[in-house]
Amino acid sequence: MADVNLLAERRDAHGSRPAGRVRREGLVPAVVYGLGDESVSVSVPARELSHILAGASGTNTLLTLKLDGTNQLALIRQIQRHPVKGTLTHVDFVRVRADVAIQAEVPVRLVGEAEGVARGGVLEQLVHSVSVEAMPGNIPNQLEIDITELEIGESVHIGRLDIPSGVTLLNEADEMVAQISAPRVAEEGAAEGAEGVEGAEGAPAAASEGGDSSSSE
Image (tube, rainbow, N blue to C red; front, side):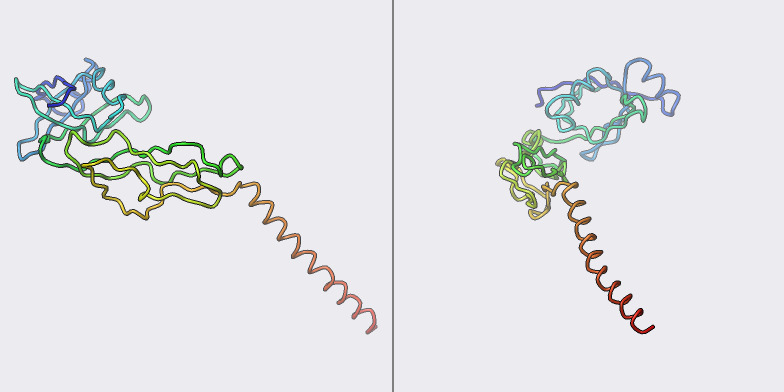
C-alpha cells in the first residue's frame, strides 16, 4: 500500500454553494472514481493535500484514501485552482491497483549547464513532461536529461531520457526536448549586415543610370 494516507469524507450536497461551504471549512471538494466502481463525491483536507502536491512526486503520489472505513489506493488525476488566489478548488482521484500498470504524465528536468549557453546561446525547453506506463508504485517523480555538451544549434531528443526499469515511455523517441538557439542579438546583427550589403550593391547601379541620363541630354 501507499505510504501517504489522506482522509476523505463522503460529500452528499452538490452545487456551488455547498462546495463553497466545504472550502471555507478548510476542505477541498473532490471525486473518487475508477476500477468499475461508482463515482463518490468527497472532501479532503486542503492543507494535507497541498503538502502532498508540493512533494517530490506531486500529482503522481500514490495515496491511500481512507473513506468510509476502507482503504482505497488512488492517484491524483486532475486538480483545479482559483484563477487569482491559486488555492485548490477541486480534485479528481482515480482508484488504482498496485498490480495493474497505469499511464501517467511525468515532468522532464534538464540537468547541467549547456556549453552553448555559456557561449551566449539561448536554451529553449520544448517538452516539459512525457507520458509513461508503469505500475503505480514505479512511476518516477521526474525524468532527467543531460544537456551539458549541447552546443549552439544543437538539440536533444526524448530518446536520450534515462528511463528506469519497469517504465515504458509512450512518446516518440525523435521528439525534441530542448535546443540551443543562437543569441538573438547576433541574429539581428546578421540580418542588418545583409541589408547593408544589398543597399551597397544598389548604389552603383543608381549612379550608372544617372550617368546615362546626363550623356543623352
